[in-house]
Length: 403
Ligand code: UD1
Image (cartoon, rainbow, N blue to C red; front, side, top):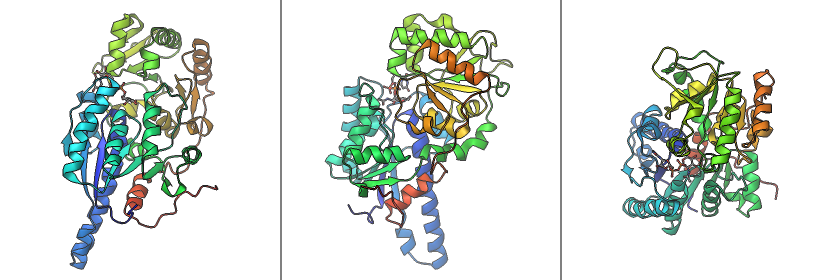
């Protein structure tokens, strides 16, 4: 590995959960570049200018609806991608193949020193494979997370991406251990913290002012649901909805639904479980016995709603982490998680799609006995700065596993 020679990077984002992870890396690069520029102006030399990082942002187009993509680029100050591959939704094989074919052309043209991928979506794995096969270094941000559930496409993406990465940037100690157990050399593992939390901490104050949706604080629960195991399975989906409708007698539930979930609601004829949320009205929530459904929300709107909620139900990965930082109790509608630290240290509890478990844990929280949690190590808003420093070969005390 040529740790000191990285000057040209490609950053990859493709699907909604990638944008909040790539945004702070883009920002850390800009901060580093403007400090080089200042130094070169001050010292009247060209050397500092040469130290600038040249990066290209590639958006694969795995997510393409305004609410799933552009709204995030706008909210998070990411800027216009240099390349938009426009791959769209397909089967996993076709989507992965399309990303690989288009991304190979970009790599051949740009000849980067390194490709930086984040998270665990199909774009992450596809671009990592292309880079590795062209002998371009790969950095994986959010490496080492494992659910041990190979029925999740994301678990396959995580394992494959980690196996071929040169820099594995981790967000928690269990990820370091997972990678070591899989035989990854400790020289490649860097425990830097959680980039998604960099974004949350940066935008929390701005999110508070973004309230398009006027709802009384702490007077509602928030729900997200999109995993195939929950929304493509008629029985699991119904179990969850029946339990949550029961809970909604105590507190209204807000449900900004992913496009695939909206499709499944129609396909299963489950519209009867919902009240349609009137986002712009004065009283958008129907407080009585209802799950209030809307389309996907922007990052700032969703963060604001999450920060002011009584409790959050989710099957997403990132929301388990965000609720831990916000100190909001989270019930995860899955049997497992690749983020166990949110259970051991944070506010998260696994409830699966089991009606009794969902009700028991919901009432515990609504009765004021929700988990409080604490902030995990390095979830401090500085993960991206650490990543950029490491990629530039600057001094850093990397994670040193015992064995
Ligand atoms: C993907 C990620 C998942 C992540 C999720 C967040 C993989 C394997 N999965 O799942 O890890 O948690 O994104 O959103 O990469 N669709 C639209 N508009 C869009 C995007 C998708 O309508 O902008 C619809 C598609 O038509 C398709 C469905 O959503 O029916 C699935 O989209 P896809 O990107 O394949 O996977 P997600 O389920 O979104």
